[in-house]
Length: 433
Ligand SMILES: NC(=O)c1ccc[n+]([C@@H]2O[C@H](COP(=O)([O-])OP(=O)(O)OC[C@H]3O[C@@H](n4cnc5c(N)ncnc54)[C@H](O)[C@@H]3O)[C@@H](O)[C@H]2O)c1
Image 1 (cartoon, rainbow, N blue to C red):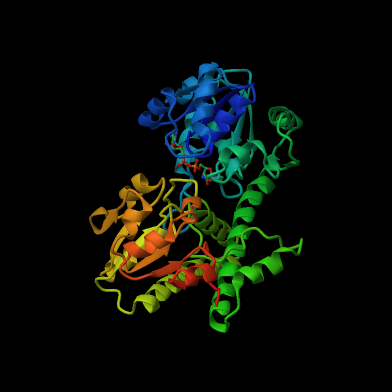
Image 2: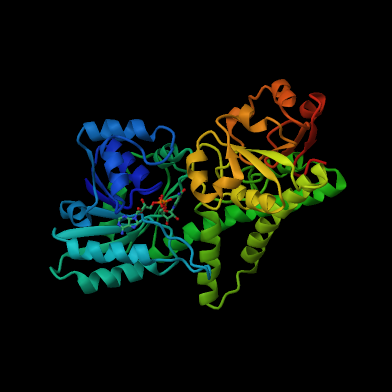
């Protein structure tokens, strides 16, 4: 099939590259000229394991190409995917201006006898209707077209794997013809395929992310109780997670969720519910708990260090989760900024995200280190904020020698409390007594 993907970011690029790898002819579009130039040179514009190799392989086979022009992308395609960003407005409402912008351009570019436009961006329910109306009004050549919804569930850090081996594929369609095209496209992927109407498909994505965020805030609340009574939240989560009705995923207590999706999708879901006169109270609480969790963590740092002013802390991990360089809504940003306001000196290290972190953190106040050992030198405490694998393998004897005080505040429960104590660290973690 001939595909056009509009928006070549974390979702669009992975979608385009994977569909090309499955044998389709794909043209990826992005308005960011630098990004397209990098891609044409076979470089991934962000860190995602395995992606760059696949870009090179599929570009050299001729199945994958890149352009900044939507018209060029749409011209020969049978199906066009929309995968541009859908950020939050300050009110929480989803900002659909990028979706509208590209929809207008797609409408003006339609030429072939039939075109399927598929929304892959995470959008509030009824956006599909808006996309349809917009194209209908601007489709001057009268090209027959349809709109479908195909939300994406991949996780950054294992995006290629998740795209090619998903738990499920959801398609929201308005006709058998659109269903047939999307079934055909996804045929090589062995996963359950759920076919529904467009609105239900849009709700599935918002509801899924909101539910996962709910699990995180739930276990974070449990961890606070565990902190007080001396119980171990990791054991509690293990005991809960073995119940098939609950499941073990997303029950890791920590400093709260971040990233480009959960915070904004929660806000968007709450907003669209409110617009329909529904107060989604649970989700308001989920957001509140997530914000408080950072206070909870900072309180632990304060307890460990007594006064924060002029203390030196080493932050290990900046990205919102391991295996990505994505800093969007990373808890590290709020935590570091608040510590700096308290007079703390921050030395930080992340295996991949330093470049992105420099753009969002006040760089003058943060000293970025080239490795974990440089970051711990002279520190009064280590604050572990992202559970990268390489932090599991540190030489803690060396770490301890380099530090001013042997204190670890583990915001991700990465280490074993017994082992850390045996090594001579004052070790504080989340909900483990
Ligand atoms: N990142 C994830 O893990 C993830 C997972 C599932 C769903 N989603 C959803 O997918 C959508 C895209 O997210 P993302 O993380 O890929 O965003 P992103 O910011 O990484 O990528 C979006 C891309 O769209 C491009 N773009 C914006 N306006 C454009 C225009 N007018 N023409 C062409 N390109 C344009 C941007 O330059 C950017 O490269 C969002 O709705 C998001 O919620 C994201």
